[in-house]
Amino acid sequence: MTRQGPRDSRVATRPSMIILQPTCLCNLDCTYCYLPGRKSKNEMSLPVARAIAEGINPDWVESAPLELVWHGGEPLAIDPTLFEELLKSFIPLHNAGLVYHVIQTNATLITDEWCELFLKHDIDVGVSLDGPATLNHNRVDWRGKPALTRIMDGIAKLTEHDINFSVIAVIDQTAIDSIHQILDFLATLGPPSIALNLEEREGVNPHHGSPSLHEARTLWRDVFAWAGRNRSIRIREDDRLLSYLAAPPSTAAADVPHDPLPTVAWNGNVILLSPELLGIKPARYADFMAGNRFFEHGVLSTTETHHCHITTQALVTGFFDLTETASKDSMTLLEKLVTTKSSTLLALINPYRNPDNDVAPALK
Ligand code: SF4
Image (cartoon, rainbow, N blue to C red; front, top):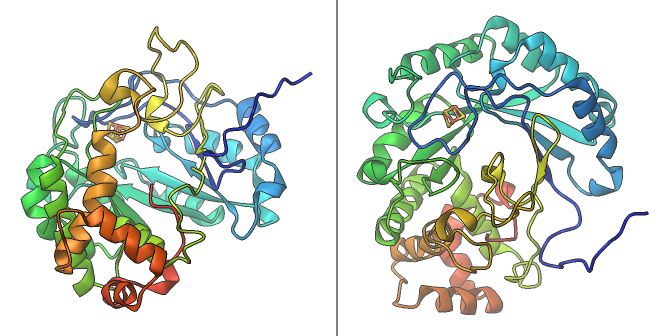
Protein backbone atom coordinates (compact mmCIF):
# COMPACT_ATOMS: atom_id res chain seq x y z
CA MET A 1 0.00 0.00 0.00
CA THR A 2 1.34 3.45 -0.81
CA ARG A 3 1.03 5.89 2.03
CA GLN A 4 0.36 9.48 1.01
CA GLY A 5 0.71 12.52 3.25
CA PRO A 6 -1.09 15.82 2.71
CA ARG A 7 -0.13 17.36 -0.62
CA ASP A 8 1.83 20.64 -0.55
CA SER A 9 0.01 22.93 -2.99
CA ARG A 10 3.19 24.99 -3.47
CA VAL A 11 4.56 22.17 -5.63
CA ALA A 12 2.80 21.24 -8.87
CA THR A 13 1.56 17.68 -9.22
CA ARG A 14 3.00 17.27 -12.71
CA PRO A 15 6.46 18.21 -13.97
CA SER A 16 7.10 20.02 -17.23
CA MET A 17 10.66 18.72 -17.32
CA ILE A 18 12.67 15.76 -16.07
CA ILE A 19 16.47 15.97 -15.77
CA LEU A 20 18.29 12.71 -16.46
CA GLN A 21 21.88 11.93 -15.55
CA PRO A 22 23.28 9.31 -17.94
CA THR A 23 26.61 9.58 -16.08
CA CYS A 24 28.16 11.72 -13.36
CA LEU A 25 31.55 11.50 -15.13
CA CYS A 26 32.93 14.69 -16.68
CA ASN A 27 36.08 15.33 -18.69
CA LEU A 28 36.22 18.93 -17.44
CA ASP A 29 36.79 20.43 -14.00
CA CYS A 30 35.13 23.85 -14.14
CA THR A 31 36.12 25.86 -11.08
CA TYR A 32 32.49 26.54 -10.11
CA CYS A 33 31.17 23.01 -10.66
CA TYR A 34 28.79 21.86 -7.93
CA LEU A 35 28.70 18.16 -8.79
CA PRO A 36 30.54 15.60 -6.66
CA GLY A 37 31.85 12.33 -8.13
CA ARG A 38 32.83 13.72 -11.54
CA LYS A 39 35.78 11.34 -11.78
CA SER A 40 33.60 8.26 -11.35
CA LYS A 41 32.54 6.34 -14.41
CA ASN A 42 29.04 5.63 -13.12
CA GLU A 43 26.55 5.16 -15.94
CA MET A 44 22.79 4.82 -16.11
CA SER A 45 21.68 1.25 -16.73
CA LEU A 46 18.98 0.18 -19.17
CA PRO A 47 16.61 -0.92 -16.34
CA VAL A 48 16.84 2.58 -14.80
CA ALA A 49 16.03 4.21 -18.16
CA ARG A 50 13.15 1.77 -18.65
CA ALA A 51 11.77 2.51 -15.17
CA ILE A 52 11.86 6.28 -15.87
CA ALA A 53 10.02 5.84 -19.17
CA GLU A 54 7.41 3.61 -17.55
CA GLY A 55 6.95 6.15 -14.75
CA ILE A 56 6.03 8.98 -17.11
CA ASN A 57 2.29 9.56 -16.86
CA PRO A 58 0.73 10.67 -20.19
CA ASP A 59 -1.71 12.76 -18.10
CA TRP A 60 1.22 15.04 -17.17
CA VAL A 61 1.29 16.29 -20.73
CA GLU A 62 -1.22 19.07 -21.26
CA SER A 63 -0.29 21.64 -23.87
CA ALA A 64 3.36 20.79 -24.52
CA PRO A 65 5.37 17.57 -24.46
CA LEU A 66 7.44 16.78 -21.40
CA GLU A 67 11.05 17.97 -21.74
CA LEU A 68 13.65 15.28 -21.01
CA VAL A 69 16.96 17.01 -20.35
CA TRP A 70 20.03 14.75 -20.48
CA HIS A 71 22.53 16.43 -18.21
CA GLY A 72 25.65 15.21 -16.44
CA GLY A 73 28.41 15.19 -15.49
CA GLU A 74 29.01 15.38 -19.17
CA PRO A 75 26.36 13.30 -20.97
CA LEU A 76 28.67 12.78 -23.96
CA ALA A 77 31.25 11.12 -21.67
CA ILE A 78 29.37 7.85 -22.15
CA ASP A 79 29.62 5.75 -25.27
CA PRO A 80 27.12 6.93 -27.93
CA THR A 81 26.01 3.31 -28.41
CA LEU A 82 24.99 3.08 -24.74
CA PHE A 83 23.26 6.46 -24.97
CA GLU A 84 21.23 5.28 -27.93
CA GLU A 85 20.25 2.15 -25.97
CA LEU A 86 19.01 4.39 -23.12
CA LEU A 87 16.96 6.42 -25.61
CA LYS A 88 15.18 3.32 -26.90
CA SER A 89 12.99 3.13 -23.78
CA PHE A 90 11.55 6.56 -24.65
CA ILE A 91 10.84 5.96 -28.34
CA PRO A 92 7.11 5.12 -27.89
CA LEU A 93 6.63 8.27 -25.75
CA HIS A 94 8.56 10.37 -28.29
CA ASN A 95 6.62 8.97 -31.24
CA ALA A 96 3.36 9.76 -29.42
CA GLY A 97 4.47 13.39 -29.00
CA LEU A 98 4.55 13.04 -25.21
CA VAL A 99 8.25 13.81 -24.70
CA TYR A 100 11.13 15.52 -26.44
CA HIS A 101 14.85 15.25 -25.75
CA VAL A 102 17.39 17.95 -24.93
CA ILE A 103 21.07 17.33 -24.23
CA GLN A 104 23.13 19.86 -22.28
CA THR A 105 26.79 19.39 -23.13
CA ASN A 106 30.14 21.09 -22.65
CA ALA A 107 30.61 20.39 -26.41
CA THR A 108 34.20 19.19 -26.10
CA LEU A 109 33.32 15.57 -26.99
CA ILE A 110 31.02 16.22 -29.95
CA THR A 111 31.88 14.00 -32.91
CA ASP A 112 30.22 13.21 -36.25
CA GLU A 113 28.73 10.12 -34.59
CA TRP A 114 27.10 12.20 -31.85
CA CYS A 115 25.77 14.69 -34.41
CA GLU A 116 24.17 11.88 -36.40
CA LEU A 117 22.58 10.59 -33.20
CA PHE A 118 21.19 14.05 -32.34
CA LEU A 119 19.60 14.27 -35.77
CA LYS A 120 18.30 10.69 -35.79
CA HIS A 121 16.55 11.08 -32.42
CA ASP A 122 15.49 14.68 -32.87
CA ILE A 123 17.51 15.86 -29.85
CA ASP A 124 17.77 19.59 -29.10
CA VAL A 125 21.29 20.61 -28.10
CA GLY A 126 22.37 23.09 -25.43
CA VAL A 127 26.03 24.08 -25.17
CA SER A 128 27.62 25.32 -21.93
CA LEU A 129 30.00 28.18 -22.70
CA ASP A 130 30.72 31.35 -20.72
CA GLY A 131 32.16 33.69 -23.35
CA PRO A 132 35.37 34.41 -25.29
CA ALA A 133 38.73 33.09 -24.03
CA THR A 134 39.39 35.54 -21.20
CA LEU A 135 35.83 35.23 -19.93
CA ASN A 136 35.64 31.44 -20.28
CA HIS A 137 38.50 31.02 -17.78
CA ASN A 138 36.48 28.93 -15.31
CA ARG A 139 35.90 26.17 -17.86
CA VAL A 140 39.06 24.07 -17.67
CA ASP A 141 39.99 20.40 -17.82
CA TRP A 142 41.43 18.28 -15.00
CA ARG A 143 44.95 19.59 -15.79
CA GLY A 144 43.68 23.17 -15.53
CA LYS A 145 43.95 23.75 -19.29
CA PRO A 146 41.37 26.02 -20.93
CA ALA A 147 38.59 24.12 -22.71
CA LEU A 148 37.61 26.84 -25.17
CA THR A 149 39.39 25.45 -28.25
CA ARG A 150 37.77 22.05 -27.74
CA ILE A 151 34.37 23.68 -27.14
CA MET A 152 34.70 25.64 -30.39
CA ASP A 153 35.70 22.44 -32.25
CA GLY A 154 32.53 20.80 -30.96
CA ILE A 155 30.44 23.79 -32.03
CA ALA A 156 32.05 23.60 -35.49
CA LYS A 157 30.88 19.98 -35.73
CA LEU A 158 27.32 21.02 -34.88
CA THR A 159 27.47 23.71 -37.54
CA GLU A 160 28.84 21.25 -40.14
CA HIS A 161 25.80 19.06 -39.49
CA ASP A 162 23.42 22.02 -39.54
CA ILE A 163 22.37 21.48 -35.93
CA ASN A 164 21.01 24.49 -34.07
CA PHE A 165 21.98 24.85 -30.44
CA SER A 166 21.18 27.13 -27.53
CA VAL A 167 23.77 28.36 -25.03
CA ILE A 168 23.92 28.44 -21.24
CA ALA A 169 26.58 30.71 -19.72
CA VAL A 170 27.57 30.92 -16.08
CA ILE A 171 28.21 34.48 -14.98
CA ASP A 172 30.45 35.13 -12.00
CA GLN A 173 31.55 38.39 -10.40
CA THR A 174 34.45 38.84 -12.81
CA ALA A 175 32.10 38.84 -15.80
CA ILE A 176 29.63 41.49 -14.61
CA ASP A 177 31.34 44.41 -16.35
CA SER A 178 31.82 42.41 -19.55
CA ILE A 179 28.28 41.17 -20.08
CA HIS A 180 27.83 42.95 -23.43
CA GLN A 181 31.14 41.49 -24.66
CA ILE A 182 29.97 38.03 -23.58
CA LEU A 183 26.58 38.38 -25.25
CA ASP A 184 28.14 39.77 -28.45
CA PHE A 185 30.50 36.79 -28.60
CA LEU A 186 27.78 34.22 -27.93
CA ALA A 187 25.53 35.89 -30.51
CA THR A 188 28.16 35.31 -33.23
CA LEU A 189 27.63 31.55 -32.73
CA GLY A 190 24.03 31.94 -33.88
CA PRO A 191 22.01 30.45 -30.98
CA PRO A 192 18.29 31.26 -30.95
CA SER A 193 18.45 31.64 -27.18
CA ILE A 194 20.93 32.26 -24.40
CA ALA A 195 20.44 31.43 -20.71
CA LEU A 196 22.46 33.18 -18.03
CA ASN A 197 23.06 31.33 -14.78
CA LEU A 198 24.50 33.56 -12.09
CA GLU A 199 27.04 31.62 -10.11
CA GLU A 200 25.63 30.52 -6.79
CA ARG A 201 26.86 28.71 -3.74
CA GLU A 202 25.86 25.09 -4.21
CA GLY A 203 27.07 21.51 -4.14
CA VAL A 204 30.85 21.09 -3.88
CA ASN A 205 31.54 24.42 -5.61
CA PRO A 206 34.49 26.01 -3.74
CA HIS A 207 34.67 29.03 -6.04
CA HIS A 208 32.18 31.44 -4.45
CA GLY A 209 32.24 34.00 -7.25
CA SER A 210 28.57 34.81 -6.82
CA PRO A 211 27.67 38.42 -7.73
CA SER A 212 26.37 40.74 -5.02
CA LEU A 213 22.80 42.05 -5.15
CA HIS A 214 24.02 45.40 -6.48
CA GLU A 215 26.18 43.74 -9.16
CA ALA A 216 23.32 41.49 -10.21
CA ARG A 217 20.94 44.44 -10.52
CA THR A 218 23.41 46.23 -12.78
CA LEU A 219 23.93 43.05 -14.76
CA TRP A 220 20.24 42.48 -15.46
CA ARG A 221 19.77 46.11 -16.43
CA ASP A 222 22.58 45.73 -18.97
CA VAL A 223 21.24 42.38 -20.20
CA PHE A 224 17.80 43.89 -20.86
CA ALA A 225 19.46 46.79 -22.68
CA TRP A 226 21.39 44.34 -24.91
CA ALA A 227 18.32 42.20 -25.54
CA GLY A 228 16.32 45.26 -26.55
CA ARG A 229 18.86 45.89 -29.33
CA ASN A 230 19.23 42.22 -30.34
CA ARG A 231 15.69 40.97 -30.45
CA SER A 232 16.35 37.98 -32.71
CA ILE A 233 18.14 36.26 -29.83
CA ARG A 234 16.10 35.47 -26.77
CA ILE A 235 17.51 35.70 -23.25
CA ARG A 236 15.80 33.11 -21.07
CA GLU A 237 15.71 35.22 -17.90
CA ASP A 238 14.34 38.30 -19.68
CA ASP A 239 11.58 36.21 -21.23
CA ARG A 240 10.78 34.80 -17.83
CA LEU A 241 10.17 38.23 -16.32
CA LEU A 242 8.36 39.67 -19.34
CA SER A 243 6.10 36.61 -19.65
CA TYR A 244 5.24 36.99 -16.00
CA LEU A 245 4.44 40.67 -16.42
CA ALA A 246 2.35 40.05 -19.53
CA ALA A 247 0.34 37.17 -18.04
CA PRO A 248 -3.21 37.73 -16.81
CA PRO A 249 -3.26 38.61 -13.09
CA SER A 250 -4.84 35.27 -12.18
CA THR A 251 -1.92 33.28 -13.59
CA ALA A 252 0.78 35.74 -12.57
CA ALA A 253 0.00 35.34 -8.91
CA ALA A 254 3.01 34.81 -6.71
CA ASP A 255 1.67 31.47 -5.53
CA VAL A 256 1.80 29.63 -8.87
CA PRO A 257 3.08 26.19 -7.82
CA HIS A 258 6.73 25.30 -8.35
CA ASP A 259 7.58 22.78 -11.02
CA PRO A 260 8.76 19.73 -9.03
CA LEU A 261 11.71 19.42 -11.47
CA PRO A 262 12.56 15.78 -10.80
CA THR A 263 16.20 14.88 -11.42
CA VAL A 264 16.97 11.19 -11.84
CA ALA A 265 20.57 10.21 -11.12
CA TRP A 266 22.47 7.52 -13.03
CA ASN A 267 21.54 4.99 -10.29
CA GLY A 268 17.83 5.87 -10.19
CA ASN A 269 17.96 8.18 -7.14
CA VAL A 270 15.51 11.06 -7.47
CA ILE A 271 15.91 14.63 -6.25
CA LEU A 272 13.09 17.17 -6.43
CA LEU A 273 13.26 20.92 -7.05
CA SER A 274 17.03 21.28 -7.35
CA PRO A 275 19.40 19.17 -9.47
CA GLU A 276 22.31 20.70 -7.54
CA LEU A 277 21.48 18.40 -4.62
CA LEU A 278 22.44 15.26 -6.53
CA GLY A 279 25.02 13.28 -4.56
CA ILE A 280 24.84 15.64 -1.51
CA LYS A 281 24.06 13.89 1.79
CA PRO A 282 24.31 16.08 4.90
CA ALA A 283 23.84 14.13 8.15
CA ARG A 284 21.03 16.46 9.19
CA TYR A 285 18.74 15.44 6.33
CA ALA A 286 19.99 11.94 5.46
CA ASP A 287 18.38 10.84 2.21
CA PHE A 288 15.61 13.41 2.22
CA MET A 289 16.61 16.52 0.35
CA ALA A 290 14.51 19.00 -1.60
CA GLY A 291 14.79 22.64 -2.55
CA ASN A 292 17.88 24.75 -3.26
CA ARG A 293 18.19 26.66 0.01
CA PHE A 294 20.50 24.23 1.69
CA PHE A 295 23.87 25.38 0.39
CA GLU A 296 23.63 28.95 1.62
CA HIS A 297 22.22 28.30 5.07
CA GLY A 298 22.90 24.63 5.79
CA VAL A 299 19.19 24.12 6.55
CA LEU A 300 16.04 23.85 4.48
CA SER A 301 13.82 25.87 6.80
CA THR A 302 14.89 29.30 5.54
CA THR A 303 12.65 31.19 3.13
CA GLU A 304 14.97 33.65 1.38
CA THR A 305 18.34 33.16 -0.26
CA HIS A 306 21.05 35.15 -1.97
CA HIS A 307 20.16 33.16 -5.08
CA CYS A 308 16.62 34.57 -4.92
CA HIS A 309 18.02 38.09 -4.43
CA ILE A 310 20.29 38.00 -7.47
CA THR A 311 18.21 35.94 -9.91
CA THR A 312 14.69 37.16 -9.17
CA GLN A 313 14.66 40.38 -7.19
CA ALA A 314 17.62 41.91 -9.06
CA LEU A 315 16.06 40.83 -12.37
CA VAL A 316 12.98 42.90 -11.54
CA THR A 317 14.81 45.94 -10.19
CA GLY A 318 17.35 45.81 -13.03
CA PHE A 319 14.54 45.92 -15.58
CA PHE A 320 12.85 48.85 -13.87
CA ASP A 321 16.22 50.63 -13.61
CA LEU A 322 16.45 50.40 -17.39
CA THR A 323 12.94 51.66 -17.92
CA GLU A 324 13.70 54.47 -15.45
CA THR A 325 10.80 53.57 -13.23
CA ALA A 326 12.94 52.18 -10.45
CA SER A 327 12.15 53.30 -6.98
CA LYS A 328 13.48 52.24 -3.65
CA ASP A 329 10.64 49.77 -3.65
CA SER A 330 10.49 48.27 -7.10
CA MET A 331 8.93 45.04 -5.87
CA THR A 332 5.93 46.97 -4.57
CA LEU A 333 5.74 48.83 -7.86
CA LEU A 334 5.82 45.53 -9.69
CA GLU A 335 3.06 44.09 -7.55
CA LYS A 336 0.89 47.13 -8.27
CA LEU A 337 1.53 47.02 -12.00
CA VAL A 338 0.92 43.27 -12.23
CA THR A 339 -2.36 43.36 -10.35
CA THR A 340 -3.74 46.28 -12.34
CA LYS A 341 -2.24 45.22 -15.70
CA SER A 342 -2.15 48.87 -16.50
CA SER A 343 -1.31 50.24 -19.91
CA THR A 344 1.79 51.69 -18.22
CA LEU A 345 3.06 48.19 -17.64
CA LEU A 346 2.44 47.03 -21.20
CA ALA A 347 4.11 50.17 -22.57
CA LEU A 348 7.15 49.37 -20.44
CA ILE A 349 7.53 45.75 -21.43
CA ASN A 350 6.48 45.68 -25.07
CA PRO A 351 9.73 47.11 -26.49
CA TYR A 352 11.55 44.14 -24.94
CA ARG A 353 8.98 41.41 -25.28
CA ASN A 354 8.44 38.77 -27.94
CA PRO A 355 4.94 37.30 -27.39
CA ASP A 356 6.10 34.03 -29.01
CA ASN A 357 8.21 33.49 -25.91
CA ASP A 358 5.45 34.01 -23.39
CA VAL A 359 5.71 30.62 -21.77
CA ALA A 360 6.13 30.86 -18.04
CA PRO A 361 3.76 32.82 -15.85
CA ALA A 362 5.70 32.05 -12.68
CA LEU A 363 8.61 34.29 -11.71
CA LYS A 364 10.63 31.95 -9.53
S1 SF4 B 1 30.11 22.46 -14.94
FE1 SF4 B 1 29.53 20.79 -16.36
S2 SF4 B 1 31.24 20.72 -17.83
FE2 SF4 B 1 31.98 21.83 -16.03
S3 SF4 B 1 32.92 20.30 -14.71
FE3 SF4 B 1 30.81 20.49 -14.03
S4 SF4 B 1 29.70 18.90 -15.14
FE4 SF4 B 1 31.67 19.19 -16.19
